[in-house]
Amino acid sequence: MKKFSVLLCAFVGLLFSACGGGEEGWKRVDGVIVFDTPEREPGQKSVLGLRTAPMETVRVGFIGLGMRGPGAVERFTHLDGVEIKALCDLYPERVKSAQGILSKRGFPEAASYSGWKQLCERDDIDLVYIATPWLKHVPMAVYAMEHGKHVAVEVPAAQSLEECWQLVNTAEKYQRHCMMLENC
Image (cartoon, rainbow, N blue to C red; front, top):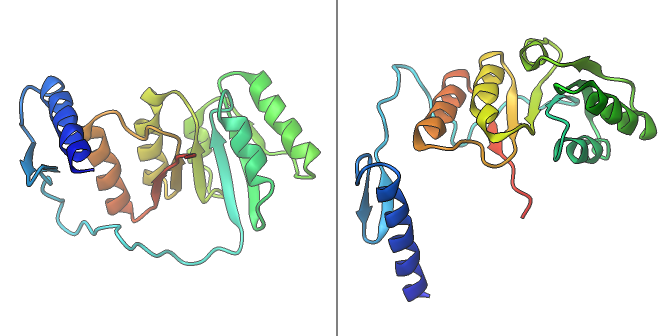
């Protein structure tokens, strides 16, 4: 196992040195890669251990109904205490198909959007579920948290260390949960 750990650290070290011009922003401590933590804004509070008031009903909006989105919509119809308030995709036929999932499971029709910002700006959504192409994950998650929403985002949530810190800083500033989803 120790040899595997050393090889993994060597591989990750090569990856990071190839993707960032050396060891800027990180270092190895006892074979573990440790990243520098940027300064936080005054008053910013960690979200580690964040607790929010319990919700009897969680109102959800889904952005992205192509590959993984429809499965997420279907899974949420099996959860107690969930209302699916809005569905969003650039392609109307995908929204229509997801509406069919709701209808089949006895859920009311959700509001339909082709613009994700309008979904995030709704007052009746608690959680925004993002299942779009990777390049949109961070801007959508940040915008949703800025508008008071908790966020669940498909993998990868971010594609760089800078984007990871954008998510952390926004979650801490607005005290919102931001969860990267993984199915294995």
